Image (cartoon, rainbow over all chains, first blue to last red; front, side, top):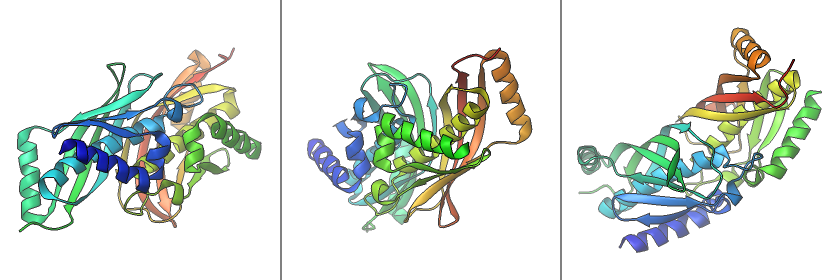
Amino acid sequence: MHQQAIRELNERFRCQIPLTDHMGLEVSSWDGFALRMVAPLEANINDKGTGFAGSIASLATFAGWALVTLAVEERCGAAEVAVYRSEIRYRRPIDGDFEARCCLPEPAQMEELWQALTGTGKGRLELAVSVVQDGEEKVQFQGAYAVRLIAKPG
Amino acid sequence: MHQQAIRELNERFRCQIPLTDHMGLEVSSWDGFALRMVAPLEANINDKGTGFAGSIASLATFAGWALVTLAVEERCGAAEVAVYRSEIRYRRPIDGDFEARCCLPEPAQMEELWQALTGTGKGRLELAVSVVQDGEEKVQFQGAYAVRLIAKPG
């Protein structure tokens, strides 16, 4: 089920969000809890030969969006997810292919989201995304996402 | 002088940062104090037909970077500028071509930067960037940038 969701999501955003295709972004794993999204350095390089900050911010924002979308859609069906606030800290330069890693917050936060979605069809979720190269965290991201179910349950 | 700096900067990043070319980013004005950078919706659209959050974050981050780079290079010569922290608030969706607007902080902050650069060749600057569509602010961005002069003065 997760493999099919990954394939469908990668296909959907490659067609509908042209920039993600130019950046070479791809969900590489998703197990119902944790997600990884990869980005090649070459398409995302800057004038100093390191990762372009705009690409890194895009990757992190988008990985968080993909995590929330996959988790919500697997449980509740089609949903619109949008980031409304984020913060990012660029700790060290990136000089090779990189990836974003994120996982769902602790169960109490998820329970709040599920209850809000069940009750009103809307909810919010904050999560952390780590941007990693060769196993080392280079960039830290925190994002807040709004969720709206397309078909309200009940 | 400013017109030539705009042309050179646009040319430099179009060649060296491939993503900015895919996004159609371009400094449209710079007067030594304020900068505008434009982005077309078409290249930066998402699956909902509005501006892709990753593109908006890239535009804002990059506009701040361009402002700091132009201001520092006009006064002090070649410099390396890098964002190290930022925060962004997506207030309303963007559904047309958009632009980033930013200007240099108040004189006291600039004076601190110039003194740091003169003394050590290094400095930091925080600034706000507004992302605007049809004259309305849609997204607010705050970025912190580190500056290092390539040839230390003195």
